Length: 604
Figure 1: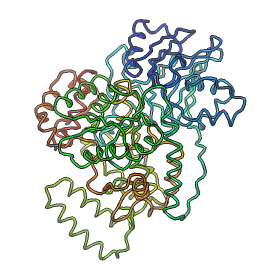
Figure 2 (figure 1 turned 180 degrees about the horizontal axis):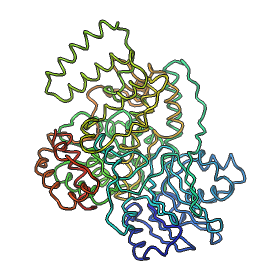
Figure 3 (figure 1 turned 135 degrees about the horizontal axis):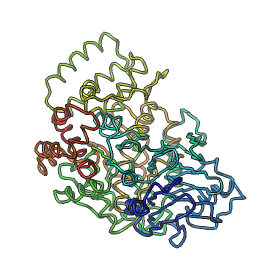
Figure 4 (figure 1 turned 90 degrees about the horizontal axis):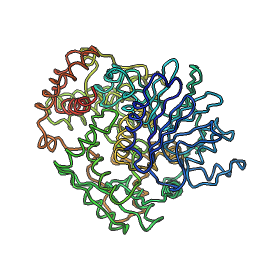
């Protein structure tokens, strides 16, 4: 894993010291080696975390003095690519050097064949062509700013803002998304004039000629069949075995993040079979006492050493400081702070860890989100009266979790009788922190362009929707920034092509019913680790509200931050009004405001 920064085009507009300072801002992503390369019409910098081919893979990679590459990530399938393309000569353990050979030996139109997590910039002096690309799942970031005669690009939006003559300004569309959902869209930054490549997108720039395109996926063909569940479990086990074997390949210590849930336990079980040196890293959060003890039981059962981080008030503030300084984007997900703490502890013993992001969004892990797609055989008349009772119960309850569950039951009853677009919009709105009218009253607009008019919107459509929005914009941002803030690599086996395509081939009854979620994964883990109870409440990696309230006075903090002159000026420039009224609406909005304003306080 690495971080990179570069400027291509007219360099006379920038001071060399400013470019150097900006490049230094990605150093935390790759603490092992830092290089800056000066060449005709370009300056490119790389900060490297050494994981594979420790003595190889120098960046920026260059050849014949005219072709330069900076790269962030891991690509796991170069061995199979060499079999497919015999003319591709790969003589290195380093996937940086292998990627360079791949791009510069006639295969630059085959990005869809690269399996892994990556972002890269390739500058060819002789043709004057710059190419930027980002992996299809959006696991790695790539920000850029294009002017008529130059391009600035980086793994960090902060590094690009450092190049600006004036103080950065808020991008209004980004703040709309943050206030609505607590995250930004996958193609934007919080800063005006700085954007991201979309997942799976390639951009080429030459003499102010810009071309953007999505590179085409070339999936393995999994047929959608009604095969027996037991047979599909065996098939999935073989896929995981192959994927995890490849993702354990490293020249440094590799571990696994073990929460005690189904996804991480599957990864741990396959990793333990492959290597006897795997360590497990877990975190214990007060108020969440289900997954913690189970993770210890699983580690003991697998015979792997476990390191447990206790997340307390001290860890809260240490992680908050790292979030403020090292994150180039605000995020309201409280799980970001325990994840930073977990990474910091894991970094003492390893440089890489497998993690289970994507499992829920592939195999239907959220009952409150996906149970609405199980189907209903009730008549419209019975649904009307049942929903009337549910609405009364929802109105009377003061429990936010019970209110959410009742809302989901109401929607689940209505789903079979709604138009597909309405189902889509209701599914998306489950994340909303502020409603459309509140967003509008703040002088902002919600982006409705992402809503289509599909013929149907069933379970697989909902899972795909969550992968495109919640997974990419929240969970993968949280995973990348938390790990790379401390120069640590997370690998996500659930997001391998083979696992994604297999999951998409499954019928709904292999994923969820009225009693269970992730049915096929449950059967798989039961066969791998018998004797463990997999029922009980599902805990995400978040901080309970009562813990936060014990650590910090949110009302006082938010009001204090809103009074800072730089915050007032930033909101004023963005022409955003009536903010404080909505920030202090309830605990969720106070926390969202706190995470945003803390992040803004040192950038505006």
